[in-house]
Image (cartoon, rainbow, N blue to C red):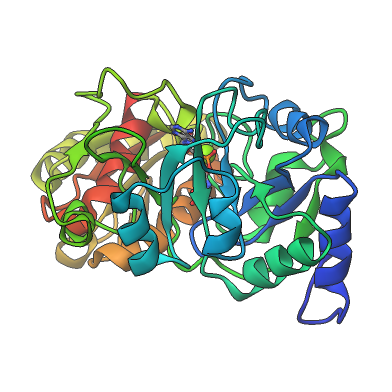
Length: 352
Ligand code: TXA
Ligand code: MG
């Protein structure tokens, strides 16, 4: 693996862009999560993404563009809803699905006749995409830079963790440093290729914000009530974004009641044979403010506001995984729509 850091290497962006232009794999920072990029117009380069991730090749990837003009080239049409959304939220954490131009990014689109497009709001990503465009590459296909079914990386160290020494060819992934991802969960995806726009994945942008810009109702295809016409793409699989530990969502009171029962047992197990004691974690917004941390239970606080909770979520779950936690009890997030993205990721992780 090679790490490029624009903060210390003046030619990092140029080298990273050349890596992509040459058909190589490069993990790049975005404001949502790190992506595993390859030039979108090169089916062989895109095939390397599917191989590195271990992802089925009919699952479509998002194509990242430096500006709206570049996006237009990948589409046969930009329906009015897509135009409004892009004008309002690009660059930003929004992916639009539009009808794909014939023969454009076929492998990246997983053979579908639609394509997901996004212009990320991250200075390093934008500089990289512009440098690629200057070399004639107008789109970079990039799913989240994790192995299939795992948590998305929000730090370059997470990307290294996912690929370094993990199998043949995986060290071929080069990484462009961009710091911690601001949003922390993947982009909001709106399918604008059909009669009525459909929210396929909530993110920082909420359904209400999307509807306000579209100027009409937007359907929401949820894992528990999927839109039958929506493609079976990996981000829409129920059991996605999972840590290794089993994750269970429950109200705070239930966690507290569970702790009362478990604490003595866990403590006894830890005293008997510390190495073999089960590792359980509690990830709650308010419990640890009301109650002293339990002995024998790993405690983590979930931030009380949705943007910070989203920012921290995947890094916290990774940290608990790294500690060898087997079970994570997570306090159910608030019903407020601002929490839709976090709730969506946690429900999927709990379903795994
Ligand atoms: O924030 C993000 O979107 C990140 C960063 C790297 O940009 N990317 C990301 O990619 O999350 P990925 O591959 O993990 O999720 C992309 C999802 C697919 O799983 C699928 O659900 C949807 O985007 N998607 C892409 N193209 C599509 C299409 N043509 N039709 C329907 N869904 C599509
Ligand atoms: Mg993903």
